[in-house]
Length: 111
Length: 115
Image (cartoon, rainbow over all chains, first blue to last red; front, side, top):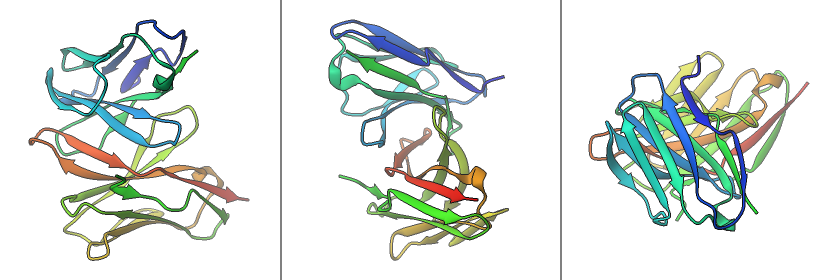
């Protein structure tokens, strides 16, 4: 029973398309995150939600819009995809000051 | 602006020997440090952590050392096993608005343990 699950695992799409990545956690954690791992392998925070409320919004283009329908779900919608959006996107959750539990990642390739 | 740095992109160690992975940070506000391990096509998994009030934390074969004055931490794996071969990420935490952690990650070090 996967603790943090994200779908799809792989996503190949053309420039200009709109796509969504879904994330669900069954750990009862209050806080969820989206991280991006770029070509240089850095993991960088994009967004954080606590109990459906946006609390961290890093300098991410507004083509990226997170949505949290409830505290167990945090989805990421990306409009007008660009080549530079190609990366691995990780969802994670945590309980306040605890460590993260990560999903297995979504490899997005924009062609 | 890299606040967490792992200057060794890779490390190769013989099975049974010690692996030492290093990490430096620049932000003196960080007060909680973690190591994550990542296998290909999987998400990072939590390995061990240390609070800034400690200088050492041990969990089985894994020990993390923190030198606050030098803003340096290291992960020791003794003895190293082939299954330890993975990418190791150092992360530092800044509690954000009292809700959850904003973890800042290093670029990772690829550890290869040769049998």
